[in-house]
Amino acid sequence: MPDYRTPPRAVLLVAALIIAAAAWYLLRSFIGDTARECHALYRAARTAADTVRVDSTVTPGSAGRSDPRTCGNIRNSARWR
Image: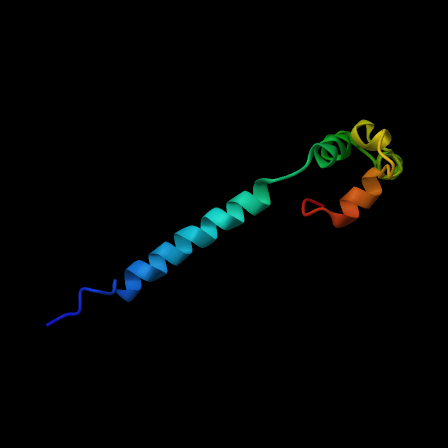
């Protein structure tokens, strides 16, 4: 007679995969406003010289902070490079 007190391993595996996929999506989809500003500037860059100029740009969102960051700093720490 089967033991119905514990769920089958397939159910546990599917549940774990769903939880892992949801966690991956939530962690992957979060990008801060400053990183979004830089991402838009990098998309608009057409040449290597444009990219170098964007690397040294301080974003408007971080300009008023005590530690303003350039897009180059954010790009080095971002997932979307």
